[in-house]
Image (cartoon, rainbow, N blue to C red; front, side, top):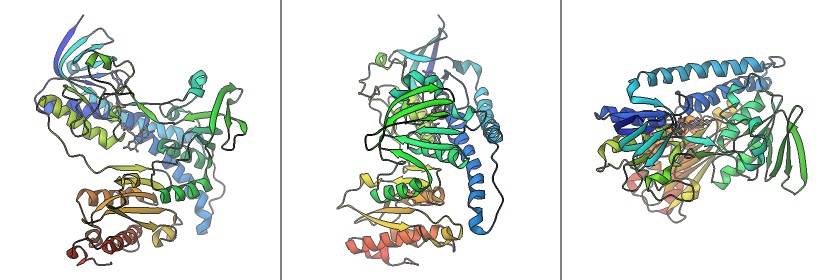
Length: 477
Ligand SMILES: Cc1cc2nc3c(=O)[nH]c(=O)nc-3n(C[C@H](O)[C@H](O)[C@H](O)COP(=O)(O)OP(=O)(O)OC[C@H]3O[C@@H](n4cnc5c(N)ncnc54)[C@H](O)[C@@H]3O)c2cc1C
């Protein structure tokens, strides 16, 4: 058996693993990068990029659908499903190609193809027969789509986000299982591309929101466009000629069934730890099979084992995976003298239309006596109305005493940009009145955000606990 000795073994050549490996190299260490499936990363291959490419096609179709409201008639829309999927795949392959090329530039002796598993606290076995002794291990194995039990028998016939972008054509009909961010992004895009799409979920949740006011608006708005079958219990799925027949119990308890050409299961993702042999690490594992992981060090207890990216169940987002990879790589080299890293303000965006965004503290994190809440509706916001996109609600959260902005839940047009402005302000520990001293152009969507900031500043002022100078110079207030 071949034996390899390295400073740091990195399991998984995704975003977190690549960043961890680079950090080890920068610090003069010898890393081994182990990948079981393919180079290219989840984000580029089956995640962020192909999903946004599909949404871009849906946006183009939707613009034609809504054009008559502006007196612009383009005639009837004909969607060439094969051409839509070809562009998704072509552009996706271009992005993947860059990542693969970069990964292949790594010295071949420092990377290995195969499935790794722990056979000791820092000893790994790769299924090509190699054993690796490492001073420290970075686990960056990502996450895997969760497929619920009713689909066990027909697993080969259902799509997940791992398969959907490989379709050669758009299906005539699609059942989307789930109403989380990935389900809504992909399902709404399919719907706007002319696919008869229905969503199924046992819950009432739509997207990531915890703020009851935002949840209501989202339900009103997306409910008006999409076929949402929430509160249902899926009972069975069977292959039939022409697709899959789903059987479910409606929210009012009636048995129902319908056949869809394709079924997309987007019911959440789970850390990829199956077969990883975590028992051999000696770490205490929780009910979810994971050890406790410190978000500021990515370390498991005092062990030279670090979890980075989706696998740690923290925030399954690309920029978090990159940060955690860097932290894990650095600390794997520094172990046992690991360093704590202050994390960025949480920022998450969903590319639905209207867009969804979460910044900093969630509504569910607020403490009534410590925080105040203000709202700004986009239902009549000037620039949004000009563009016929006047739907949505922003809820802003401030801290009594410090007057600081601490978070927001947002649903509306252009939220990907406003969420960044807010995340930067929250991370800069800006007060609501200080944010109002920043320039706002006219007419822009950000004026809607300013309405919310003004309301938040008023709420904070009403608490009487902010410093007077916080209110001294707030143009536009
Ligand atoms: C449809 C979809 C849309 C998304 N959109 C966005 C978005 O718009 N913005 C955003 O920020 N995030 C988005 N994400 C999330 C983002 O893609 C992930 O957070 C990110 O890619 C996680 O990176 P990672 O390095 O943790 O995992 P990955 O990139 O998945 O890398 C893990 C690697 O480990 C390998 N591996 C697993 N087990 C083993 C083993 N035992 N041995 C060896 N190798 C192993 C896997 O093959 C894989 O290559 C989206 C995800 C999906 C699915």
